[in-house]
Amino acid sequence: MMLLLLGPPGVGKGTQADLLTQKYKMVRFSMGDILRDEVTMNTSIGNRVKRYLNQGTLAPDELVFEIVDDFLIENRDTNVLFDGFPRNINQAMSLEKALARLGLSINLALELALSRAEIVRRMTNRRYCTNCGRIYNILTNPPQKDNFCDQCRLPLSSRDDDKEEIINKRFETYEDQTRPLVDYYKTLSVYRQIEASGTPQEVFEKASSMINALTG
Ligand code: AP5
Ligand code: MG
Image (cartoon, rainbow, N blue to C red; front, side, top):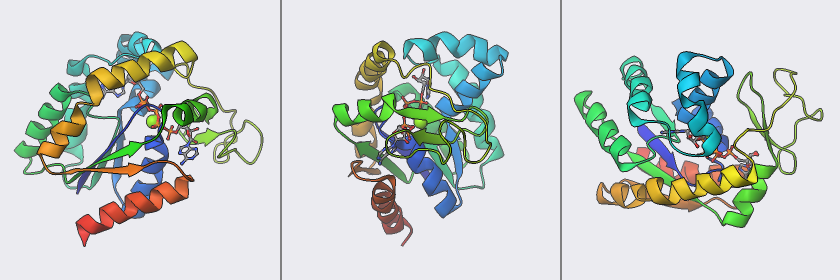
């Protein structure tokens, strides 16, 4: 099973990806998390992508494919949940071709939809653990101990791109480059949308029923 989560920045893709991969025993592929780790570790990929993340624009497709190709080969026999990839038509077409070479295809492209005001509220209150990647929200999903990861016990961070001017640019990038994927996946008859309001658990239940309908 190959699933992907579509949706604007901050809508809750990562939060749902965590819950869904646990329930359905899928491997998660989160391009944003991978790129942020590269930046944190100061690798050559990290140095190449840092400015795109900090501007709220997309990293170059070639670089993204290098990462994806390795992942697909390693995980060809596994159920995969893509979070934040693909992000433009070129990436979607390349993914389709790469999967086809392995005899695979996307089974569900699930879009999470929410008003922009609510999304901005989620993003500006987000915190995350740079060690394990766990996502928190000081209003809706706070850690047990203020500003410390429940799992790692390390201090939480805000994302560098969760600043107002970068948030605006990320929305612009999303509208220009990523939203066209809705029509792309409609054409492939694998597109579904759910409303992402409500608690993470409520959204998870809606997402699960879409996946259950698929798997029978
Ligand atoms: P990426 O990391 O993918 O960021 P994004 O798409 O902007 O999405 P976010 O991670 O910000 O939000 P999310 O939807 O995961 O929400 P979350 O679950 O955290 O990409 C970052 C950058 O990397 C890009 O700008 C680009 O530069 C680069 N990049 C990534 N992929 C690329 C690609 N394919 N090609 C090129 N470049 C790429 O939730 C947000 C907050 O809300 C959290 O605090 C959470 O606790 C809270 N929350 C979640 N659900 C709920 C709920 N139901 N109710 C209340 N609060 C909730
Ligand atoms: Mg995310």
